[in-house]
Length: 147
Ligand SMILES: [Zn+2]
Image 1 (cartoon, helix red, strand yellow):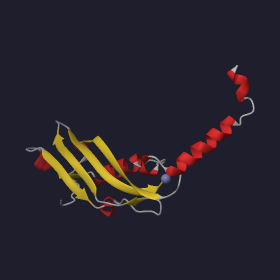
Image 2 (cartoon, protein in one colour):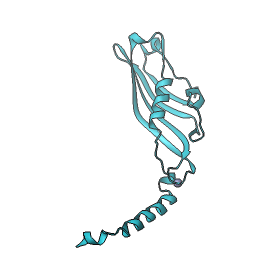
Image 3 (cartoon, protein in one colour):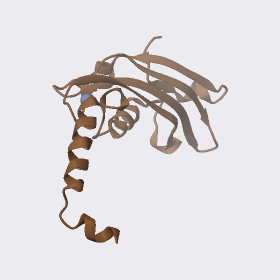
Image 4 (cartoon, protein in one colour):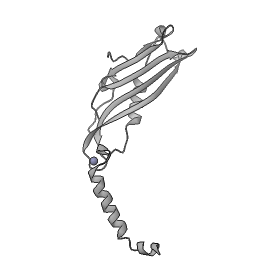
């Protein structure tokens, strides 16, 4: 949709607001790096409403990153979903509108795993496991434990 991340407080005083945005990674200042590429727009769905003195924003966020497998180092795309993410801000801290861009950006960064495996089961991992198992079998005192 429009890619807006600003919420008008005056509007919210009489309405609740549903959020349904598709935002380019650059617009969220999510910068692509060699080992981390935001491959698609970030999808944000949810709602914003006011309590007596607080703005509450409740979002589901979905995005895709391309990053290298921890085992074979191949780049692959991973879908990341953040469910039920809450942002709250005291109205006394807000002038006319509140921009949730920064909060969403931080949430995305926190969800990017530091350890990933391509296709959820990397073929390189299998050969690494085999290697480790072989090593165990050759453990010189392994036979002593059995009896
Ligand atoms: Zn892999």
